[in-house]
Image (cartoon, rainbow, N blue to C red; front, side, top):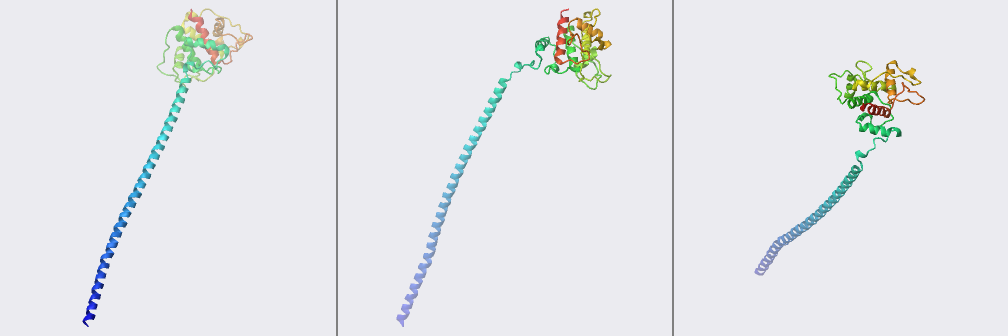
Length: 277
């Protein structure tokens, strides 16, 4: 009986020892295993983060390189564009532009002379074979008046016209060189006829120096019957002075329109004829 009790006690003791060992061993294994797993996870995370950072750095480097390349390309393109613009600007020299290219061959030298005499206005430069307008001829007439008289044409205090504010027209109207189609309308874009041009030049010369108009002159053109009575004296005078010549066959074509270059040639001839007197 005592032996059985002793054996039982030993058995219980062994069981308790085993249980104690097992209880102590399990947490040790899990603790160690957990610590190892945690440490491995941390190491892995750190390595992955390091890899990600490395990739990010590479991407940043690539982006930076791409941006640098793009910027360099843009800068190069801008430089090319600047070079193109500089080349274009260098090729264009305003002083070398031929403003006489559109003139008829016979009129080129005459127009150049008129420019030298300061008889041209901006509106009549170019498109020389276009018909000259009332506005354009008014500007030429004022230039001729100022160059012959040595005076500066004055502006009126009040503009009488509702269809123009051109100061040269207002000066010509105040001088009496040109008139409106009504008291309030000038019609600046109307074309002018050859007899009207002769009349306006005649008035301009008379205003610049009355002594330049002397005597009476007979009209010898074959188509003189087509002239308005009011233009007979002016056409006779301008023809006698060699300023207004015919269009051929001893005709003046008084109702025909004149081109810009014809108007410029007439103002140049008038200046050369009377400037010396």
